Length: 267
Image (cartoon, rainbow, N blue to C red; front, side, top):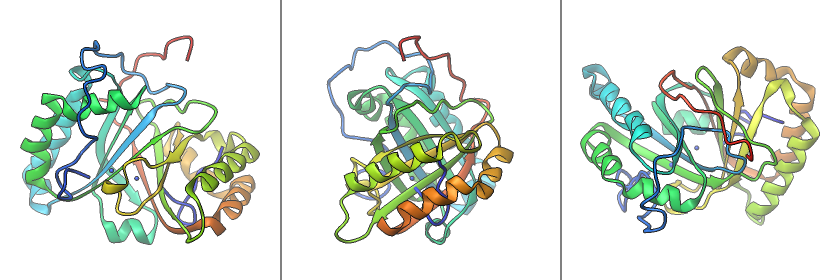
């Protein structure tokens, strides 16, 4: 499978103002569900990505670290939340990423869209956003998609993840891009150990125009860096590049707090 860098990059916001919608609107579906085991190996997860640009004074004072802790703690209290990682961005890998300037990323997964809606409305999530994110963030961007890849992309502590967000060129339909990426990843195979999840963004109001998201998961930063020299990956990028307008690429490393239980055997 492929990892798309600056030439083929992919990343979520808060309410009607840019800082007030960290997730979807509330839904009553599955609201009474029991907390799920932390697992990132769901075959077709709903991916939720939030990019956060933290105020410099928040980083210096420790408020940013408190924000990370408050969001990471949602793993033990929110029903339907199968995996969450919150932490600093490792590297900004494209001009669009540098222009946006996110300092932190939240990546979480759910089995269904209603599970994501439950997360959005949960009192603990609302409290974390109101008490820690809103006071300390200059800007946020959010993207949500349902994984269109054939295989899961499990994430474990220490995994290195490349996030790519993309806008398609005029006249190109996003499903066309998804289909092309599926073919390209199949052709590239498990390039350098990459495991991917990608799909069409279904939260356009919060995404700053990004229509497509992708994460490529590696066991380490070294494996992520090694993919740059893979010929099949370069061929896959070349196949997709003509469909793309603006792309955003960044890397992050999953911290030890994002611990998951093994996925159920039927997944």
